[in-house]
Structures are given as C-alpha cells and as structure tokens.
Length: 334
Image 1: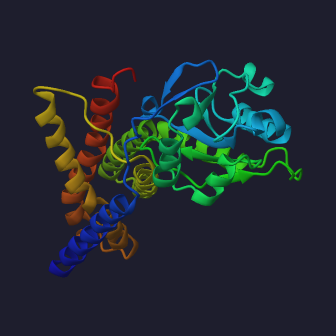
Image 2: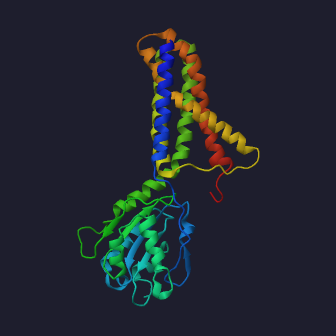
Image 3: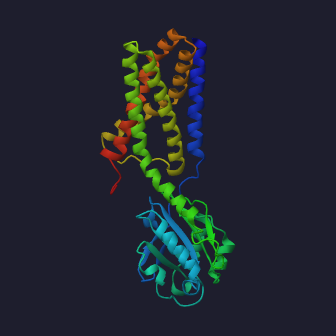
C-alpha cells in the first residue's frame, strides 16, 4: 500500500507540474498602448479601449482606399464574416497624400473603424508602426511597403490579453480566393468561443459530482456494473474538463476576482484548496480503476474512502469558484 501512495503522490506532482508548465509557457499578456488615432470622420479612437476584447487589427496603404478595390472587398468580407460585436480596426498608413472620404465598402459597416496613422496629419504613424511591429509582431519591412503606398493589406486577430494570433496578408492581384482571411476569422471565432468555457467547466464539475454521488449510492446497493459505469464516466468527464481547462487558460489566462471585503479571503481559500487537491484527482482515479480492473476490491475500497471525498470536494468547489467569479462577483459590465 505504501508503494501505491508513493505512485499516487508522484502522479499528482507530475499532473500539477504539467498544469503549471502549460499555464506559464503561454506568451504573457501585454496591455494595449495608450494610442489614439482619428477615424475617417475625424473622431478620436483609443486603441486601449479594446482591452479585454477580442478584435481584428489590419493595416493598409492610404492609397489603397481609392485604388485597391479587391483589397477593400476582402477586408469587407472579413468584417462580414467575423463574430457579432467584434471590431475590425484598420490602421491606414501613408506618408503622403490627403485623407480620402470613407470608402464605399466601409460606409454601411459600423464595426469597421478606419484610423489614420499619418504624421502629415498629426496622427502618430511612428507610434502605429511601433505598435504593429513590437506589440503585434508584424513584419517591419512589409509595413514600410504599405506606408509607401504598396497595395494589399495585413490582418491579425488580437486576443483578450492583447496577444496577436498568426498574421495573414492579402494581395490586390491575387484573385484565387475572395476570402483569403478566413483563417483570421477562424482565430476570432475560436477566441470568442472560449467565453463559454467557464460555464462548461462548471457544468463538467457538477456532472462529475452527480456521477460520484450516484456511484456511491449504487455500490452501497451492490449494483457493481452500474457503479463501474458511473465511475468510468466520472473519470472521462474529468479528463474532458482537464483538456478544456488547459486550452482555456493557455489562450485566455486567469480571470481576476472582482469581489471585495470578506469575499476575497473566502474565494482565495476555496481556490487554494481546490487547486491543491485537484492535482491528486487524476492519479487517484486512475489508481482506483486499476485496482477495480485487477479485482483488488479491498484496496479499491480503502483508497475510495479517501479519494471519493476529495474528488467530490474538488468538483463542488469547482462550481463554487465559477459562481464567485462569474455569477456573484462578475466583471463590471459583464
């Protein structure tokens, strides 16, 4: 039995280390710069207002607004394809020329912001380029070409932490596809879909708790097959939760707790105990199934007396953490 506990502890440490590694190798979020540009109506638009939002940034030459119908058509298709409520912000680069009226393709598209980045008109083109190259990691040479009037455009989806996804480029002369930016749209839909994951995690935790209680009641009634079915289902749901949890936090990061006063020590106490005990769940569950598979029922029963309450506590506190973060103390305006 001692060897079994050693393997359980080692397995828990491996799982905990894997979680910590995955959550810490993600590119860190960077606050959006205090950058203000003017849109085509002369109104100020603050890039920092997009903090905590998923949005799409694109860059195009000023001359393309009048002379690149294919590029504008593809940006318009990008606007129409992206998720509802999302903004497409096009930074217009060009060191020469006058600011033309809003292109026809953009007039009826309210979620399409065209902001200048032009030193001639007292807008900060150098700051826009710095934002593009340093923050969004776009190619400086290609941006310089756009600034000198080159046709085409670059687009990239930006996540809620201000981190860019992979950039894509469209060419004015390439007619192979009317929607060459579909991968940018795919990134946008993927990031928006992650908003549903916290509720999904609460549902998975609640489902696991229900399966554990059902499994306990069934084994007390000597319904072994039904008990086994419930426990295997609980393990499967827990594994689905773990994968979804890692995907979510790798792409979104951690949600800050918005509560104040007495709620803060309560929340962090629950979160700490939940996180520490959660590291033991997968190895404990696997060990229990191993004993059951090899018909070592006494060892399975002995381990279950400890593992089941821990597993049930982790599942229930997972739902509680969700409620405290998103239901009882949600983000302002969320």
